[in-house]
Length: 75
Image (cartoon, rainbow, N blue to C red; front, side, top):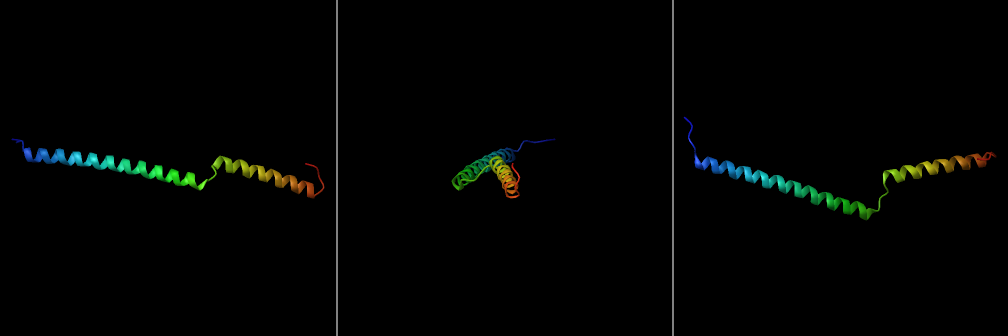
């Protein structure tokens, strides 16, 4: 025979609500941390990876052209 215990029911509801609040607070903390880190990165004025790769390729091409000019060949 199973009986209903109002105290245990209330404790279960309270625990479930507390877990929901904790999860929401965790998500809010993640969002706040991400926003702050995005602000810091923006303040650092960092270059994006694709821009870096394009600049690296351009520098490599210019070095090859300089080496060709120094060896007497025309690029």
